[in-house]
Image (cartoon, rainbow, N blue to C red; front, side, top):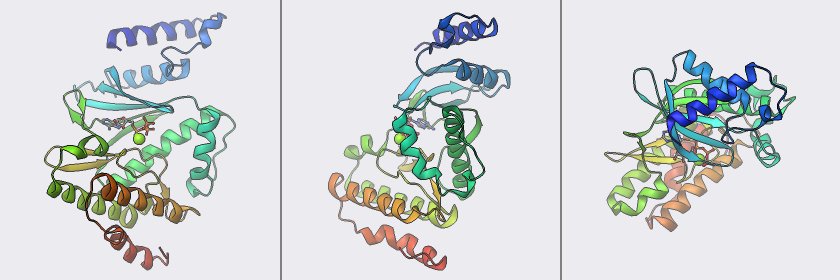
Length: 271
Ligand SMILES: Nc1ncnc2c1ncn2[C@@H]1O[C@H](COP(=O)(O)OP(=O)(O)OP(=O)(O)O)[C@@H](O)[C@H]1O
Ligand SMILES: [Mg+2]
């Protein structure tokens, strides 16, 4: 969608809200994502000079949309907006929240609180991973259900996901990417002390000069989470299967496991 159209829609929605019209349109969703509260949040981000404008959609998933935005200094930013949740989404995320000590004190009286908590969980996970040296987009801020982070791309084009890029890579390059993934996995587990929980070719971006970035970390849990090992095993399997079956590379599961086993053992965790 064009920027001016989007801005206009948002402004119009806010104007209506401020007038507190009884009009039932007030509660209609503008462009699906933009319910009144989201419009207010985006306008607040503009007021706080975090973003200057929102550009088009980079990706639209079921539960969230990612937009390209620009900072007042014209730096590209990725704005991930969590949509109001569906029952399916709620069911899906409870397993990551229950058992996470960071969520213990939080009450989820309504859907919106849950979505806001989920967005903040991704923000905190990004910060923690970045501080541990994991290659993730740099988090900028999180306000309500809107997460702002570094845009990974050239001009206004995002970098490809591994699933999109691997066919253009040579065997040698794929092997290098595999080593990079092993190294990121090690940093996530051993330095950030987290488990990604959805690590796959869909959540790894391939940057120029054969570098990678790990994205989509909302579901990441602490190593102390009761299901951390189950999620970690699934991450390892996903990566291993992708490189063997899709990328046709002769790699061993142990190459991934070997990187994380020593630090898990140190913590008394058997993998
Ligand atoms: N920082 C970023 N820079 C550029 N593009 C991004 C960034 N973060 C996410 N994207 C793009 O948006 C897509 C969706 O983001 P993400 O994986 O975080 O959300 P998701 O909840 O998995 O959404 P989906 O259901 O669409 O996979 C990514 O596959 C990627 O194409
Ligand atoms: Mg994703």
